[in-house]
Length: 418
Length: 162
Ligand SMILES: [Fe+2]
Image 1 (cartoon, each protein chain N blue to C red):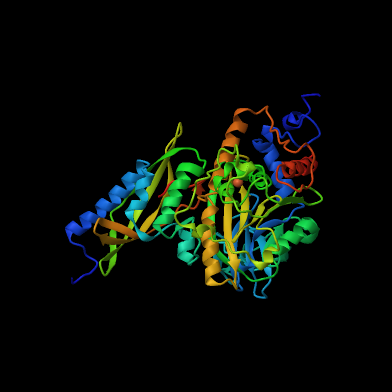
Image 2: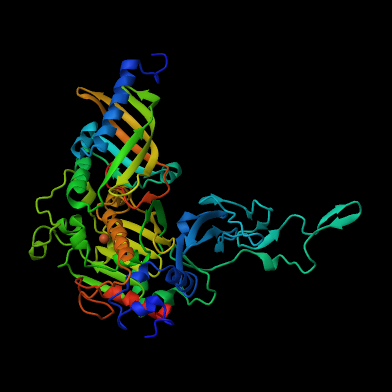
């Protein structure tokens, strides 16, 4: 290979497969810019929030798609719009509150005014200022309001979950998810009214793709997370299924809880604590819900930036917000349903102790991701080895596999053209 | 008492001694001592200010009994993989917000610094304690300690108690 023309990251892939990801894929600033362009700003739907977060006309939420600040806003007609938080005049990131209610958006710098759909509706001194019988200044004769609105994104709302795309040509959300993943999406979001329970935010010093991988990796929970193994929430002998879409970009890890305790699979698992008992077991007061339809755990990864968690009674969306190749912010929105009993809401909140930045089975995910990134930086010419259960891609009917990770990187290579 | 929100000096001294002892236990990594600062029937939460201010119930850690604190200690000791770190609490002076019977309601600012091996010290979590402190036969105990933190981002994870 001609090393003077090939990009370093291209050269680093050892074969045409996707099981050996070069460490530079997690650290390269050039690849990161291309990922933002091709996954976050083009051809993909990105999560921006829940419609329950902005229930009333004028309600807005500021969030991120990739590294671009956007506003999710409900207009006077009840519609949901997503606009970029950059003034068309001089580029000011004009909205500073994270949540609020407004009649319109006004940039503080020169008071350009936008309606809740992002249309420019007025600006000072457009026709100049009259002084001593003449008009000073003003915009040129060919100026029109229509040409200077905010950047308006395509919006898709499905059953209370809001996605947006900078790409007006993006396919429908339903086609983007594909039928199998859409089915699991609708299992959680079946049109019932959602209730936001609150937020958790953590900054993880690792590449954003590592969080996608973590939730496409059924190999680790029974090993890294002692709690899961000990209480039967997740272990290698459970009936489970790994589902992916036709492109291999999205995935669902589906499992059924068993009774826990010792068995063949816990032998040799260093993290298994047979004698572990709880002083107060209300944290594991799991009550099956009708809508589960069998599985007690379904973890969905929607590429590139969203994880949807159903772990027994605990529900959250987890929004991946990259910040350069070496960091991402991870925003958890825990929710329940508007018709939950107070006991069920209490239960969801109690089980939330397992998840999030201090969670008994989640805090360590962030910790190991940080340490992977340290290793990637240290040894730039090396590659991962994700060949549990072979080198193939696609779904599986067990959890002793890294197929979902390989599926994602096969898709990644096609889109990234490396 | 004319002003129920004023403690006499011995009572205030006992309160700041409790706060100082709590911080010293955590900074020394004496996790087994942590639940002993609480009543059996107690509340401990670590909650983002955003949730607290907006009335959203989710907390980063939400424990409802001394038993749950003991279970958290087990998690720290035995099950949670994490990069080891020191923590250092700097706790302000408690402001007395009121009394309910003999229970003292207080608010105290705190800053927690984290120091990982081979790394610079950093600000980990900044906020305030909202406490309900109860006199008992074995000294003052927390009936409730709500840690409401300003810090917008948790630097990766919180393993040890604040
Ligand atoms: Fe995990």
